[in-house]
Amino acid sequence: MTSFVLCAGTYTHKLFGYEVLVEADMSVSHLTIFGAEPHTASVRVVAFSETGKHMVSGAADDSVQLFDMVKMRERGSLLEHSGAVDDLAFFGDGYMVTASADTTLCLWRTRDWARIKALRGHKAGVRRVAVHPSGRLAISVDAAGGLKMWNLLTGRAQFSTRSMAEPRALAWAPSGLAYLVADRAALRVVSAEDGAEIGSYDTPPRAALSDAVWLNDTYIAVALDSGLVTIYDVAAGEPIHELEAPTTARVRSLAVFRPPHAAAHDFDGLVAFLASASSDGTMAIWAIGTPDDNFAAAHIGTIDSGARLTTVAVGPVSATRAKPEVEVEAEAEAVAITEDIDHDDVVFDEEDDEEPAQKKAKTTGGKGKAKAKAKAKGKAKGKAKAPAEVEVVAKAKTKGKGKTKSKKAKAGSKRRRE
Image (cartoon, rainbow, N blue to C red; front, side, top):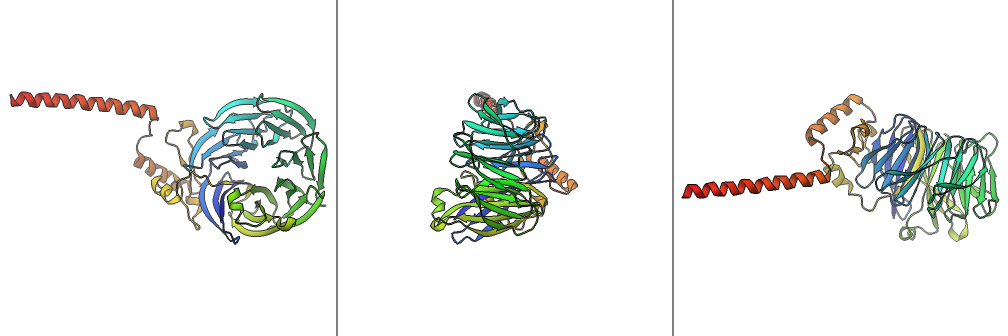
């Protein structure tokens, strides 16, 4: 048995989150765990950190929104970019890179969400970025086809070359020995050692490529706007399998979850779980395996979000996350977990100590109802919580005053007895 979190972004500024549980017999169930409307324009990208502690989203409103998946809270915004945030990537839990239409990339430290470096050099908007598994290198490609490899320790570009204009996908192989880059018509696999092309795939006539992800070092899943997902074998140099989505709508985005080693023992020959998001709101989940060294895939689940989806991401369930029942009770229904929950009523709670500029009304429908709820919640909570150091000082002062009053009371009592 294993579980993971799936998050989808939409044209209508919203995020929907689900916890997906896969049993050893491949039966699937899911829980709706959050809904939010943190952006004012379409969501372009969502990503999780390595352990699932952080989730972030980027959008056409130039902002990056931050979420604490342990406390299930929205943490604020990063407003460094002056163009749409088209892609972002974590390495570990500690660092993140964002790519923007303003031609820059930014390197962030997640401990305090400080911007460490701005990476400049692209001549057009940066469409995709991918961080090497080592965390030391990153590659990025812009709308004009300029590709750069960056040394993240120095913040400088190591080399530049020409690649595909208007890229749809860019990703490192799990081993870091190769990377893929793709536009709407073709996919290329490039060796990281010498830059040589080691594989290629051209889309069928009248079909456009939407996304591509590595399943392992051998297989790549390619999403097409015809509603199909094609499996490309790098070693064989050809497509070997087609996955039929539960809908004929355009497949917009793909995401891969590789279960922990211990959980993988429950699934014979399992390579990964693949999730797809289609423009009609349908998300499909496949189990991908290589039993007896042969490729195999099984469609094991479908989630209907009822929204126009733009992107999807998967991440591990944070090991330190509070139990759902406790979270709902403690945070006054900030997060509700139920299978039949209405998305209009599920919202991320906001941090009480956020800056006013970072606070926004969070609702997925019914503005009047949302304002009424926010007002009632404000009355219940009272004033915003002070920072920890202020609380300590306040407590110390209160404690001191208590002692003074106690001494005076004892002295008065003594005089009266005399």
